[in-house]
Length: 409
Ligand SMILES: Cc1cc2nc3c(=O)[nH]c(=O)nc-3n(C[C@H](O)[C@H](O)[C@H](O)COP(=O)(O)OP(=O)(O)OC[C@H]3O[C@@H](n4cnc5c(N)ncnc54)[C@H](O)[C@@H]3O)c2cc1C
Image (cartoon, rainbow, N blue to C red; front, side):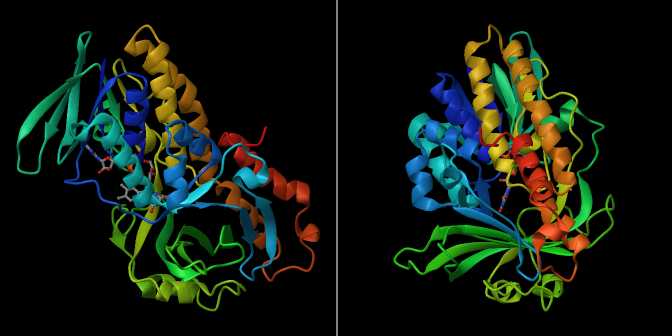
């Protein structure tokens, strides 16, 4: 059996590894001319790390990223609202790993090349559409110079991101991604180690949130960490069009982000304005998602990752859910009596779960705990218990973990 994959992002590449492991032939078509290590920080939750460990990638992840030890939610004055251990430190069987998204893609890509061979990844080819019949599926491809060709397979996986061409053919009236009016600026730079060098913080409230976490150890510099930061703030009305179309590599402008943090945050571990000013290049990304779909699988064609369930980047879930989907899909293809049955079973298993996460992220995800506290105590507090009880705060954070499928058993 042969799988054709549209898109060589994390979802497409991990699908290729799982399908190859299950004994299938795989060909990936990636629109970009080369697989480049783009992006900034990303978090891999324990269940996604479990999947990557199954694929033999844990040593590479450890050599590149950071095993996150603790997550602290705080208000803009740095007062702790919620604090919890993460990954193996919290008793999970697998770590949570904070890592540079480009380096993560790079290590997965190298594994694909090593195991499937160099020809498995065809860069410079955009999947334009497809035709399917009982005999198989044909993907229509185009290159930048206008050359057209087709690729034949038994199954087509649309892992082609938020602007998926496969999804557009399946749902021609789906419309453009929806912006919630919130802009996200994110960058990374080398920064002095904070606490144990494995701690993540999310601080602020409804007006702006500041995210800070280490994603790599600089070689020979144990006191320094490659550190990811992000600022999330409302710059427009929900449902309006973002100033620019969503694009992960749009450069950020310091004068646009600094007013949201300067003199607004008083954190004892970092002045957000300082780390932003120290970052040579950073990016802006309007928070966009799409309504959950009623169906992903149509005969021999299905969707995976951001193509299937684009979500706001809260709760550290986009890449993790794509990885879980890759494992599920390959597992169903391995045991089902037909491709159609396998894709329907995958759809039944993964779509309802991810639809709930998309909707929960619209409510703020686990970070909603700091919004709740800020709304009740905008000038800070002496005793967090008098603002929101432990049970109330726990319900917000743990409720989300359960939804995302990584609550501790
Ligand atoms: C350049 C880039 C940078 C990112 N940076 C971050 C980050 O810093 N932090 C973070 O949390 N998340 C980031 N993300 C998003 C994150 O990687 C995804 O949410 C998550 O990993 C799900 O991956 P995916 O493979 O489903 O989608 P994506 O990562 O979007 O990958 C989709 C791939 O498909 C390719 N493609 C698109 N259309 C076609 C087509 N028609 N035919 C063939 N190929 C096509 C794209 O070039 C891309 O490589 C980034 C995504 C991209 C593309």
